Length: 158
Image (cartoon, rainbow, N blue to C red):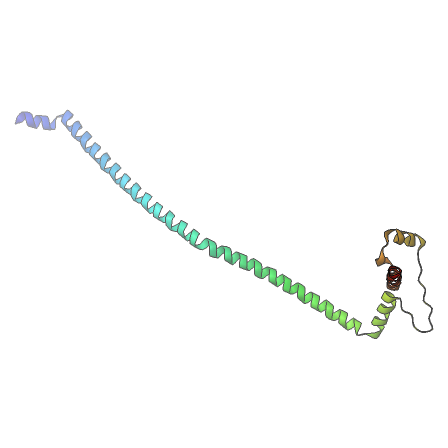
């Protein structure tokens, strides 16, 4: 037994035991780390799955929300433009109810003259030549276009 006791307390035996104990601790430590890693990996995968599911589930409603907000903004802009146009038309209507404005527009647009007045239409010779070349009916007074239409229809009847 003395040899056994000596063997038990020898340096070689102690170093071997320490090595085995250290190896066991390292093995247990690695096993725990791997278990922790695999557990974290499983948790991370589950978290990633949940986040992806939320993104997919919320993508369409968020896209719809953004599209509807853009449409609302566009409709509000159109409404404001319509309000401005209505206001301009009200102003124009009020101006046309003024007899002086209506008379001014009739004289200007239709070349009307009051009884006792003499009406003149000044024709620029260069503009007359160009209008005949372009046959621009928009540049001529309205009554000239009417008489041209009467002359053309009379010529086609003969």
